[in-house]
Amino acid sequence: MNKLLLITFCITLSFIKTADPINWSKTEPYVTFDWIDDDKKSLTIVNGDNSYSDCLLYNGTDTCKGTCDEPKTKTLTCHFEGKNCKADSDNPTYKYYYTTYCKEGKISDTDAISNLKDVGVTVGVCNSNFIKYSMVLLLSLLVL
Image (tube, rainbow, N blue to C red; front, side, top):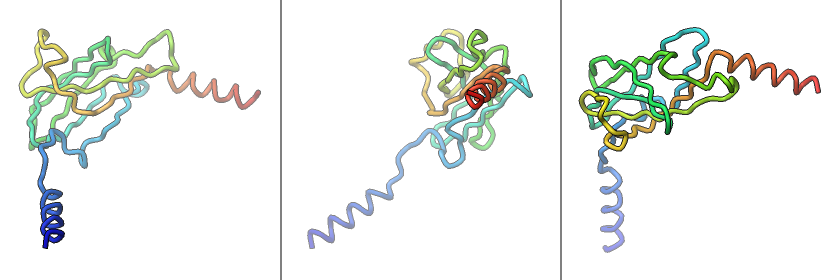
């Protein structure tokens, strides 16, 4: 009898839904912004239980602020420009990795990163020469 009660308890516990701020089945966890074809890129976050309305990208030193549309049916789309989200032009084969932080309400200039929620979406940013220099490096290694 105790085993049956324990199994029933474990099964019931597994069906309890925990509060998740992001719907992971509909949100891409990794996005690449390469500024080769377009100067503007978009990032879409599907809200779970929270309703975020503004996001920014942060890589430890640089902040990249975009413009976010009004959330529609728990979907938030933010647009970022290449001039605001820079990769290192001195190191064209290097990517910067930004973490996405969001907030319920608008993010102001005085908001600290610690007051924002890391939503777990990573954005890889590279400048327009990333692929060109990577291909040159690959071809030179093949020749050697």
